[in-house]
Image (tube, rainbow, N blue to C red):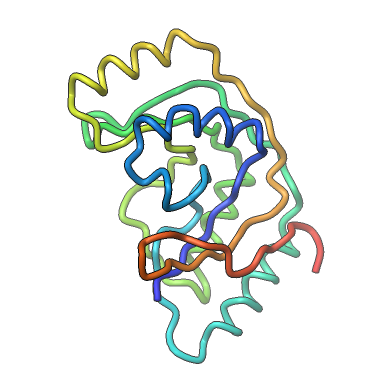
Length: 170
């Protein structure tokens, strides 16, 4: 079974992201708008409780912190993916690093870029048009990062929450 770790932002940010995702993201129905902290990974049989205990420890050691979305950006030229750019802060970087070290395997394939996907798998023409339009709009949002979720993937590809970990407390 595939697992992942993510943060689901406020309803305001999710609504803004979904206004684009429902048209421009073919994976719209598989998972709500989120910030991925740890991409898909496996948990050995019988080790789930150990992983949950470690996630509880990490959450307890991490105080809630603000996040800021300041603009729209893209992963061009690697992919035609467009996203809300989340400002990198020491807090989010430290949290992401904790989820890829110690008891957790470092499964990173790319440098960590905190973001909320708006559009992906676009043709070059679509990508250029949509990114140009989005860059003319104001996309500034603030939220408090106060929890993260351990997710698992269903057979149909959808992701669902297994457990939520609140920051700064048990």
